[in-house]
Image (cartoon, rainbow, N blue to C red; front, top):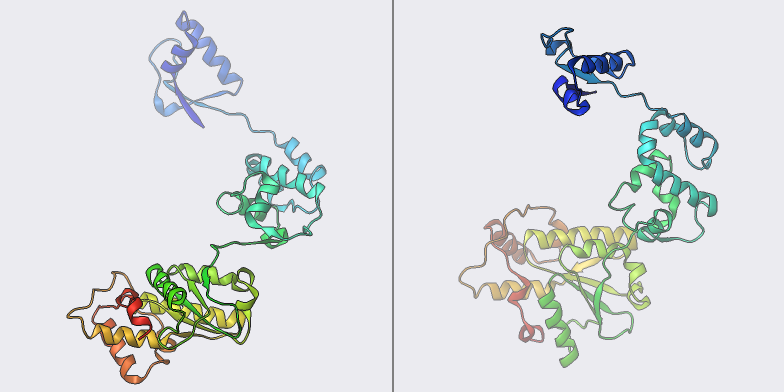
Length: 330
């Protein structure tokens, strides 16, 4: 309940006399609209009035909402939550009724699978309602799972360069943009293998972005890239983060597509050799935590694996950019 002072009421009412103010306050108390706050004390006048009062707000009548839920709502919407929480229904009502209108005019579950944002706009007229606003809460309160909407999530499309589409072929995923452009230029201008390995397609991974993009690999790429005979390689920075990207990507891709992804061993070994020429390697970015490395390191000879671990343990790393187009065809 809200509070109001006697002085505020006197000002609001613009009472000509104290007697008129007393008459107004007593009438409000009798009607149940005001309740004296006894702790505020009396004002010392005759008749005495308390200095503060509680404003008693009437209990809302939710009968019309209960009737609407019970008799004018699709049976596909569960009433359990909202019947028990009618105040919440009042707050959510516009969105629940839009969902109800959709259910009344469309087959459910929908026949055609469409994107999450597309379905969100179709039902509520807001494309971000399900992803960023209260859409999922509304569905939960209606007892409807998101999967019932027959939606698929979308991710940033894979950026890749197809040098040729012959299969089987080697596909190389690259963590960083500069290396992607340099290797693409190498293929376009020289049409030669990279470190003696012929590649048909280069994929730009955009760092950790590749983990999300590759979730829809089979859906996003051209048919030739899905051929079971293809070999897929990964090449990124030699630091904990780059190795973690490989480990997560390799594990997820094997689970979802039944294919192995291997580190591009020849490129990493060339990185190590060029690093020996540097007096000091750059310090690793702060906040990188060592994760699983066994799968990655298993592709390398023990001496090379040991050299990598020593660099990382020293807080250093080797960026992909240590290599350039002049290295790729040597």
